[in-house]
Amino acid sequence: MDMIDRYLAAVAAQLPQDQREDITAELRDLILSRFEAREEELGRPLSEDEQEEILREIGHPLVVAARYRKGPDSLVGPELFPYWLFAVKAGLLLVLAVQAIGLFIQILTDPVDAGDAISRAIHGFIGGGLTLVGVATVIAAGLEHYNVRPRWMTHWRVKDLGAFGLSDPAAWGAAAAGKPEAKAVWAPKASVGGWPGGERLFSLLVTGVFVLWWVGALHFPGLMEFPLRGADATVSGAPVWTALHGFILVYALGCMAVDLVGLARPAATRLLGAGRAALAAAGLWLTWAIFEAGHWFTLKRDGETARIAGDWSMLDLQTLRSLGDSGRELAGVAENLSIVAVWVLAMMAVGLMFQLLGGLWKLARG
Amino acid sequence: MAVDPDLFESMKLELRRGSLVLAVLACLRTERYGYTLRQALAADGLEMEESTLYPLLRRLESQGLLDSEWREEEKRKKRFYRLSPAGTAMLAALIDEWRGINASLDKLL
Image 1 (cartoon, chains in turn cyan, red):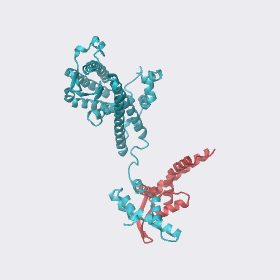
Image 2 (cartoon, each protein chain N blue to C red):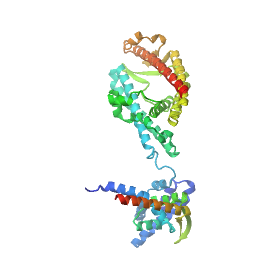
Image 3 (cartoon, rainbow over the protein chains, first blue to last red):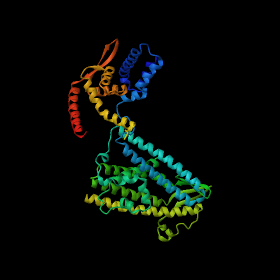
């Protein structure tokens, strides 16, 4: 096999089978024409080095073959790139926020192991961030390959653009500091009519990350363990999460479906109202089922275990005031987290009731 | 002030990119194969890399703007391209567009 054959074989291997013969025949003619022209110019046959130089001028086989490829030249083209970049920036900030909150809780529960906690948080951020970039790239490449452009990309409205500030770290910093200019952007407006598309996009992103984590496709290393008094404490879910695993997954997918409908058909107020009302009712049932189980997590450390559990009797201000009084041993931490869990579930239930009423209102009024 | 040569090169390439299809279609009013087409374009000051030209010829053919035929010449089989009827109509439309852009630019420059 001579140099031209080897070059053309490398090109052919990258081409669709039905076009290989035709394209390589044409390239062979081009190469031979270039060789002949150069030989005529020099008045002698070309050396191997000179031939190779001409092949290099024609291009690397991968590049030459890629030019013949039908479809997009890049995983994320210039049209989709700004959306990809936003998703990655906002998602990374979200992963950073999750890790920062986890780190904060870990340092509060055991300041002695702060160094270890910081190292876990950095590891978690890098792992979560790389997964997020990979997932965003796969989705964008799919949209690019099939030339799909969701309606919210082509029919966007100015009133839906608020949440795009999510990818700006300065906005997060200003919001965290409670600056007036941040409040002007983030605080709810009195004249809001319907759910803005930006919020739906953000909600879709967050729920998508949750679903990936829930089904085990996304991992946040260190999420279910934390250092406590010099030893690693682990958090394991109570049986209620296994029993409700499928229901929670369906609920989260339902939330994503409603967000997608909201993005694709923002004017379908009644449909969206019905969807949100149904989701709120399902969410209330799930919250009730989780609450009724009474046992949500188990903490383990050095063979010692403590349950994060609770009931209706803990929903009083006296119990809330006792938060933090239980010490920093495993049982004390579990007791504090039990109070937090009871109140979080109660607040979720109240929020879902408002969502149910809001959904029903939109369903009735359109 | 001196012109940044790298920036100039990149802007020049951008400026030329859109005109290459027009040049190729215009050149193929006369039947040619890839190598002679490239030479003809170069002779008129439009250098074009083979790795750009050959895939472009296939794309234009798949869009129905060119016809092609394998024939033997100088003891080798070569693929000859020429404008199809649809290509002739497209070239006329693009020439009108090009002249319109030129006239607008002339007013500005």
